[in-house]
Length: 90
Image (cartoon, rainbow, N blue to C red; front, side):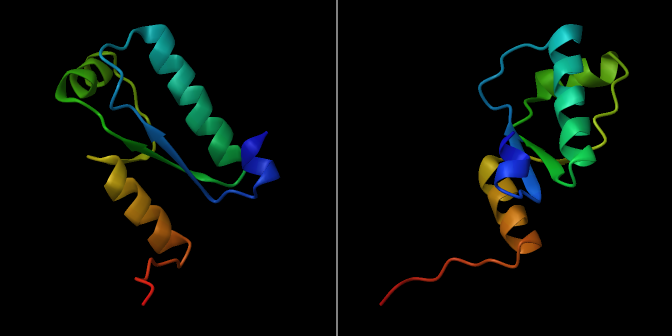
């Protein structure tokens, strides 16, 4: 398990390439988020399209995870949590 092996505190789940989501896919996502939480990592969902967000709402699913618009925002958020920053090397 990568979360345990790398002692991950944040797990980014990018849904940018997901065109549609059915109940089965949504349930798999919920299980992955819950598994991350149980192992002590925070799941962050990025790249939710308006269509996928609408489907999630219509299905009555509570992701119980932070959602951010783009993967870059998720990376920025993870860096903040981990107290990391990128510096230009001179």
